[in-house]
Image (tube, rainbow, N blue to C red):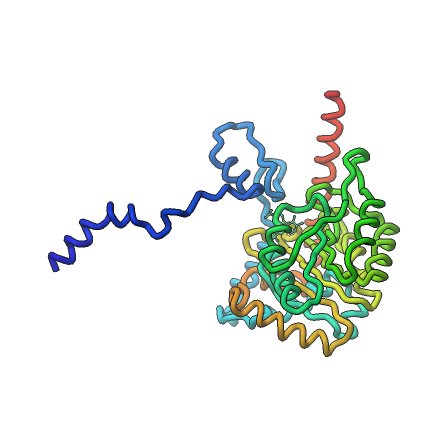
Length: 354
Ligand code: IK2
């Protein structure tokens, strides 16, 4: 007993000196989330966090939507609810309603049952699962991402096993879309290459193609047999309209071709930390879709087994109830309108200082 005690008390210094991890070098903070770390350390009363895109109220506080609080109350009061594991693909209602939200209730892809949707860990997890599926089962492993794009895209897709290249997107001279550059780069991409498209509210530029430009992009993508992978992290945030912000995706899903869609409820339902999202793969027919789903399960099971139940239950509760859904659209529009007006005020104040 004593010998054991001695060996424990004698060991800390030497054990520490000989750590098997002694060679590990300190990694830099994440360029986006690291800003929040620095922000939290900063004592200045004037500080503003311009890193991660999280909505703030007029008082600078995080917002939990009323409709989310209502849905949570309903869930808490429902004594029939249990905490069992979800299936690998997540909550069935959530998946069905998420596909309907992004594609529209009258989507031919949904009616023809040629879509598979799996619940994932928010937008990031949906991109990662989609990326790993493509690296395993798709013949062209190169993905083209816009230049610039959300900082995590390159890492997510590289670690998923894809080769990342970029296409021109933003033109600093016009502070708008470099549409010719975009078309040229996609035209010269190898046939079959995957193309990451921000469905709306392009991060970080805020510049989106017009509907006419989307149509040209769609025609080019289809004629070159490129595979579109939509990242929809801001549905409803760009224009205040859920349907309006889904137009880009709906065009592609309706033309009979295939595409992937990563959806996030972090911003539009304010469910950032609940990590709720969905990956949909629109396929040529129902048989392919069901085989694709069986392989998505093989990607997910060893990664995190199955997704968490709470956030998806909140979303499903809101999406399936007409009153709650309407309430959500009103709160969402209020957020979007406030963002638009804050940007305008910032622009005008900067202009006035010129
Ligand atoms: N895709 C884009 C274009 C995004 O902007 C985001 C969210 N970015 O902000 C949060 C962050 O930097 O981590 C995502 C995907 C992923 O969002 P989430 O995984 O939070 O749904």
